[in-house]
Length: 181
Image 1 (cartoon, one colour):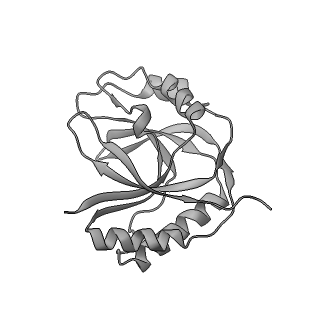
Image 2: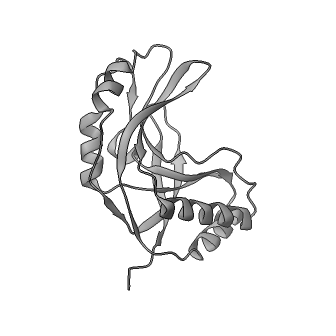
């Protein structure tokens, strides 16, 4: 049986709580819950048991020091002029880009095709559809979002379980980053 996988970072509880406090003001938006708040480093997709094991082995070979991240600002993703996602962005961070590059190379080494989409670091706050209201008031209110730095100590291989009320993300394996010496 195949698993639907992705690799991501979970902000700490205090950061997630602040995000949850910002998530309101758009009619019929499907706001994410606490368990869904994450930053995707790489969407993997469907993988059988062998490929998932190979991926875990490759991800376990990643070595790099811990670093800090900061959520800053908000934005939207659109398709054909329709907003489908509201998100919180991240301050530019070369260490995050470096980790994402290592994750991408590990995925390829495990047998997955190269990701064709550009990496745009963000935390999804809400999913939108044709019934959703305008996000303008939310975007104006949250434009100056700037949350405290958080220490990235690990990244996680998640399995995504699709449900009508929203996806459930189950941590499969955690991979620690190196403490500063």
